[in-house]
Amino acid sequence: MTALMEPLRNKDLMQQIIDYFDREFSNNKKPVGELSQNKVKSSFFEFDFDAISLRVYGYPTNPPTSTDSIRFDAKRNTVIFIEFKSGFIDKIGKIDEEKLSCPYGQDIKCREYAKILKKNRKLEKEDLVKNLRLKAIESYMTFTRMLLPCIEHAPALSYEYQVFIDDGLAEMESVLNKLGRIDNPDNIFSFLQDSLQRLKTSPGKPFYFKSVQIKGFSSY
Image (cartoon, rainbow, N blue to C red; front, top):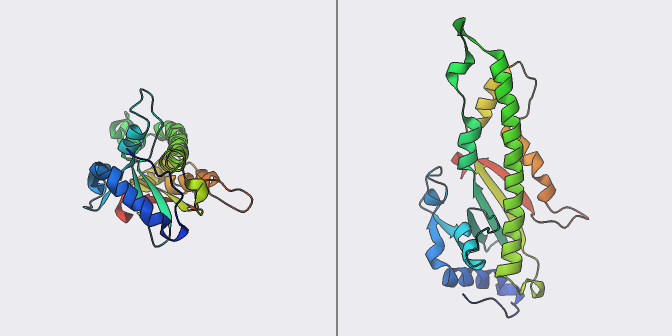
């Protein structure tokens, strides 16, 4: 694998990056359906950033984390890191319907079990946020420090972080809130959106991403 060692001219920076990825990582271009574990129905191809990161670091035993894919928007001069959270979704969304039924009356839903589930989901969501933050930061560092060693000679690129999760989670959480009589207007979409805002660049805080977006799989 060769590196982009020479300074890039401003006007064709993004095109050279795209050409570089097409040349060096053509075998790591995969359908979005495969990258999302079939959560997204699309034949569009993106770069498998997990595979690229492993290759960049020489397949270490404990590699840095990375997003599922990376995409380039030449018109907006933007690099987009994309994460499909299908594994966490299955974990967070799992509910034992039998335990929701009271043993003294199957038509009665157990409020206490709903509260326990809600508390457990809160802990799982906190783990999810930590996981998403780490993936975002380490992916950004891999791209800017390992793949683009000449980045200091180039104009600033824009970076976006997009996370796709299961569309049904908000409805599931609403049901738990209602069953447990829990006053919590926030759903997982707004929770993640708010929790990941610290990654965004803002006046006086030149952090990582111009935009952080949480979306449902259906909106891809």
